[in-house]
Image (tube, rainbow, N blue to C red; front, side):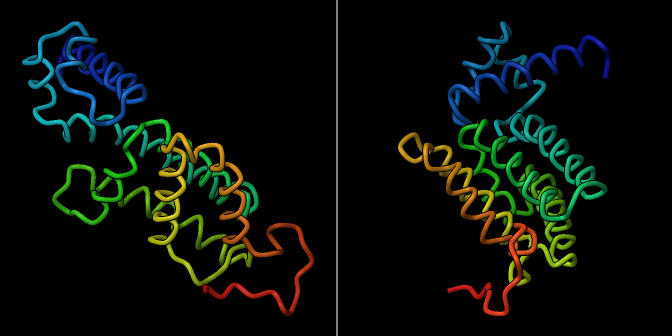
Length: 197
């Protein structure tokens, strides 16, 4: 790709990212083009569909979250690494309003342009979870798919104006349910159970 074409593409992505933060993933392509000071045809030349635009935008963030998981996996305690990644993943997903619904749909749809990035992100979380489980820091009756669903659920809470004030407390509740008493720094107890109800 020529340098000027790359610059134009990056400008469109930056503009789209700002628009989605402000208005959500359903913001019109025409509005994004107008904000970027280009014609709709120019936008469509770079990104022929809304999904192609979202894939390019979200894939960069997914890649950053995946790289963060790799870094956390190599450092810090397994429980803290898992919690830190979960918090950042949820914060990012909440920032891009409406992205959680796209992620939930794309993870099940192998034809979706977003599927590969979502699957990679889920795998990164699953590795952190498995590491915490192997260290006895996380309950063993959940898997990467459950973790991905919890990210989606908590991000959805943050997306709802009336529920957003509860999201931080509920994150702590959910993180506390995932981590074992050992990871939380509490003395272990024979009676401590992680059965789902």
